[in-house]
Length: 188
Image 1 (cartoon, one colour):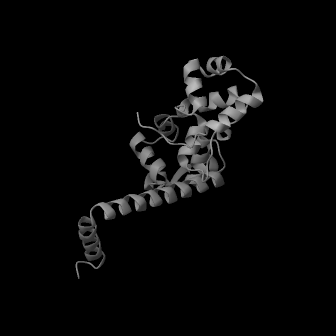
Image 2: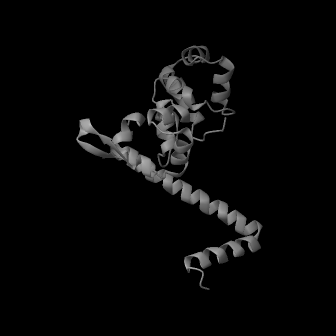
Image 3: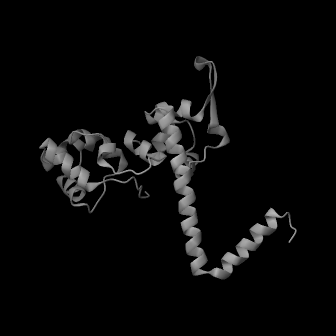
C-alpha cells in the first residue's frame, strides 16, 4: 500500500473535535478504529487512510474537505473526499486501476476516458461530464481538479529533474543533447 498525500490537517481535526465536543472514544466507535489510532491522528504522528476520512468527518461534525488544507484541489483530493480507494474509483469509472493511477497522478485523461457515449444524454459526453458523478462534484470542479493535477505533476517533474541536474550534470547534459537531436529530427 502506498502512502497517499492528500493534505490532511491535524489542527483542523483538533478544532472540529473541540467544536463538536466528542470524545476520542466516541470518534473511534463512529469511525470503526481504535482509540489509539484517533490519538495518533490528533497528535499528528499518523494520518487516517483515505477510506475512513468521510466517517471521521461525520464523527466530528464536518466534511472530508473540512479536515484538509488544500491549496489546489487535485483528483486525489476528490477521490479521498468520496472515501474511495484507487481501486474503487477505477471501478466506479469503469477503467483499469493502473490507468486510473496514471490519470490521478498526472491529470492526463487518456483517449479512452476523454469522452463516453451516453444514449440517455443524447450522445458523447466529455470527461468532466461523464466522470463528475463518480467524484460527486460538478463538471467544472472536476475540470479544475484535473488541471491542478496536471500542473502539480509538471511541477514535481521539474523539481525531480532539477535534482538530477544538480546530482549528475553530465547525465543531464547527455539527456539534453538527445532531446535536442530528437526535436531537430536527427540534425545537429
